Image (cartoon, rainbow, N blue to C red):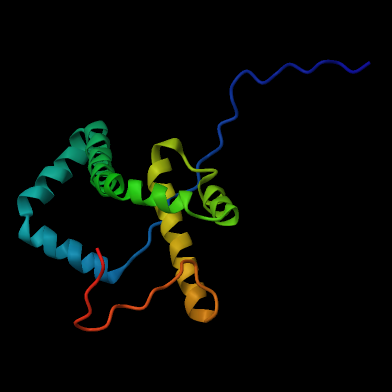
Length: 151
């Protein structure tokens, strides 16, 4: 009979991997230009990071929240059209869209749905151009110049 081992008293803390930063000269130029034009911001954020790091984290995250809210304003406008497109698709196309958003965080679900619909629409459009006989919707020729359209 094996002797039961005592469990470790503390959780095994893995040492996090060091952060790796990219260096993009174009972005660096833009940041340097902003710093030069907004010296007060540089002083403020430098002090914020040194003196109140928790507040600096919240400030950074707040900017991300604002960007997300701005993105969602556009998504809210696009969502009804995306849902209508989704409903008009074949089961195969719906499956592709569903597969694209299956593992998405619920916080980003609507945004991911609209993006998946755009990818599907783009895929269908490219297929139309590469396979001349295949079309996703019947195309009607435009009316001749000066012709009256029945109402």
